[in-house]
Length: 514
Image 1: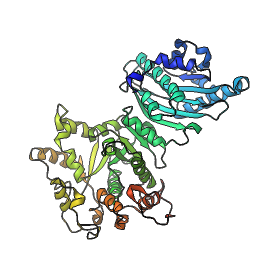
Image 2: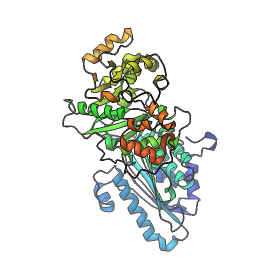
Image 3: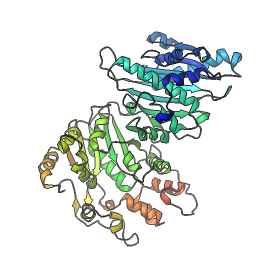
């Protein structure tokens, strides 16, 4: 939310727009009433802003105006509404006032709480606008979820967010961080969630929408955002709806052979699960905000580097603020009842059994595990060499205690004993709990892994890159090495001829095929 000292009321924002002679446009709203337009009418001076308001509730009328779309509350429907209304506005008024007016079209299509009260409460909202008269339009589109329990409260919240969006598009477009924070002005993130945001057009030609979406999580407007292999910003419900989900959490700084091997092996087991066979499945790589903020302030270049590398090898990426795994799986339950698989290393499994993370829960670790495993969730555990395991449990920094880069081959621990989910030792008072989860296959060992790469750690790879030690290239997938060298990522500074190899795309064989 914007700073309280600078916070304008919703009425004041609407009035400011109404008194701006340059702005003139149309409001088209489907579902939850014409709440946004209502604020502009009530503020006064609306004749200077509003060319038309429309609410085509009836499907036949709506189709006749905007054309058919698969769903009425969808990004496709919103796009049709914005295009139709903006083109109509310019067609009818350009000759009359186009040289002195910046036209805009605001639209939303929303499903608020129904009379029966059993529907998903969400909607799409957007604005297409000119920054100057006769200029090409730019556009902002967002997806919202309403958390109020009553329809009337949801309508009120939508009206406020719509005003915030319009005001932000006009007056905060040169400071998009401020614009994003302002979306929750006078309503709060506890009532409205914005889980997808996209800027386009000439006013935003230098904007990276992935970074803007990350700010939604950073500022508390949502708990997770998603990106496709091509860098597109995705709306989670569209991607996750009724799908079985396999998600690997990591820092991916950078992506290593271990990250890919862990996911591929887990995927091979996951698709053979009786609850997964025949189901649509989605594979995700997930990074937590805690990881991105580990160094203090958010490093935009570092964040985009990680997302780019994961996209280069064909993975969807989820950024969340869910530190605990049970919160992550609960998030997925918004969208699907299908099975959820979580590949992880031994070190992460030990963290799952660390009780300090559950002190805020009345039921402690038992409550956390009840939430985590209650709905077809399984952990697939990747092994670790005993040497590395002993360093980890001793609290040592693994990179600094390993042999030097010059002395250590990639398979330094190839003959070492393996620590797996079956022989892992947890605290004495948790052993029966662990045995229960293992015996009932809530936790399973990953099989088919490449033993020769188990000693690869992202921290070690990163250290070698910074030291200009070329051995790091053997520790990451070829497309990742190519991208790091070509883009100069993670401190890579060798002055070499740019690699002309094309990086992998969504069709890369490194991404699991399911």
